[in-house]
Length: 366
Image 1: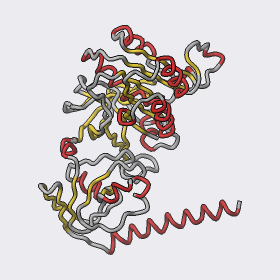
Image 2: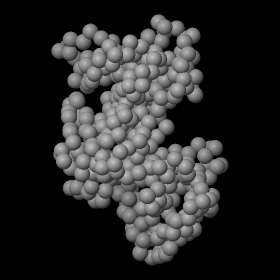
Image 3: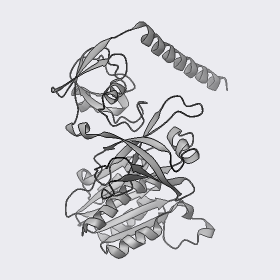
Image 4: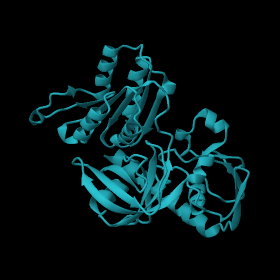
């Protein structure tokens, strides 16, 4: 017990010291106006002192950041061409050795204190901020809401991409908070976006959506982001998802149906019990309209009252059985959406069945 209390005290003192240093830096160091050179073609004159991520956002250049700049997702990578100091311990878990050698940094961890030169993908200049209003909120499971946002301006995106949802301060939460969510609507719906948002215990944005968001509310959305989308090949397709990981897969499948893509596709959807399943009728309708598509839901822990007659077990075991029955000679590519643990387990199963790693695409969350 004493060790736990000591650890908590140390953690509290560390957090307090970090806060004091941040305040001191803001008060003592007046960095004035500095320059950011972007892709050797665009010069920004900005006020120094803030993070590179937030400074670029103030100039309407939006770098991907699923965690909203908290340093916990590793998505906000940029190539830094000038010296901004050594790589911070908070960056190390998210950077490969190759990225470190190529001066890749996390923009949420770099402070803009002097003139800086960076490189970013050109497509990020197309990221926009949208004003949205909530037109519908539907409970699809006990902990997942389907929310549709009408946009003031039309959006162009690829099925499978995501947006960043910005919610205002509320309760004890100071300031805006941003989190990333995959779009479950298909690209042909340009007037709005549909998101599937699962309630995460103590999640700032998910709590706001589940407890406070109402039809008619206005909110800001950034996007689109991401390289999770269907590749244009003739390979058979394996989709694997669970929970709100349904979102990008649903977008891709509906887009395939609209474009009359005739590729063999198997969608393995994992859930704990029947109350965690949703869109069953919708998937059956897709199967009816698209004969080359097959939906295989599976329950890992079905309840007696579920009267479940479908597949059971971990979704990786179900995928393993199907691929074993079909054989490994088939040319396949896979699209996965779920937690890092689920994704890693699926990759192990798929590669064991001769699916090449370069043909496995995934969207990790959580």
